[in-house]
Amino acid sequence: MTRSSTSAPRAEGPARPVEAVIFDWGGTITPWHTVDLVEQWRVFARGAGTIACSLNDLAAALIRAEDGAWARGRADGTSARLVDILLGAGLQPGAADTEAGLAAYRDFWEPHTLTHPAIPYLWEGLRDKGIRIGVLSNTIWDRDYHSSIFERDGVLELIDGAVYSSETPWVKPRAEIFREAAAGLGVDPSVCVYVGDRSYEDVHGPQSAGMRAIWIPHSDIPESQQVSHQATPDAVAHELSDIADILAAWSLGAPTPQRNRHVEG
Ligand SMILES: [Mg+2]
Image (tube, rainbow, N blue to C red; front, side, top):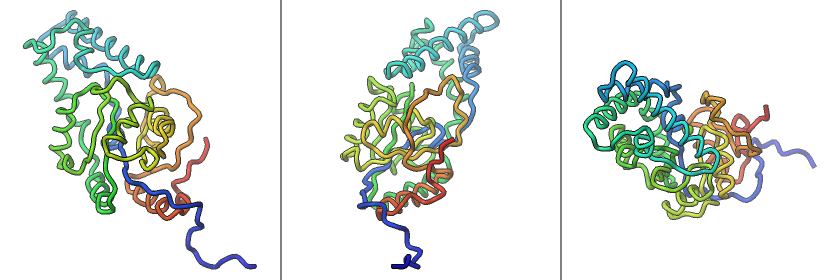
């Protein structure tokens, strides 16, 4: 028996349908930016009308409150909201100075919220194949704010379901939040693929809920935000356009394309 001369990919097993692809937001739907997380709160404090020592004190209190919220999320998987951080820093939500600070804070963030230009084409192509598009983000921001960003960038109507951790008790990598995202799309986690840039939250997390995970490995995640784990991504996307190729292979039961296989180290 001679080896087949055909170049068709070897079947790896039965084709496993993909009915939904769920995307992380920061560093995935948006291109990765290293954001000065201390400066964001100095901008807030300046916008709120504080000066000199009181500006430094308010910014420091906000930084402590936010760092504490994310550290709790990594330690026990519980979520936080922007209002929690404001209250934790002694601010009154809705007060004029707080609102002025928030306006400055949102201006600071705006350039970091832009949707990657490859996203509309990718999402339209997946939807044309009958695949539902989901968003699942660890965020302190509310749905209205995220929706306004997607609407500004013309992609809101391409999203079939979105889960924001600020609206749930959990953050990624808790399995509960992935199951909620799948349920919101009306599908079982086993037919979902999750795409994200943080291996603990976005690979270990979805796999623990029964999803496959595509990792985007090019974000410069600060070491203090990394958590060690044993998970291996089902595929690696170096560009967003790789995702369609990976899904096409999987839908045929073919192997993951060579360039999208995970290599240890
Ligand atoms: Mg991310």
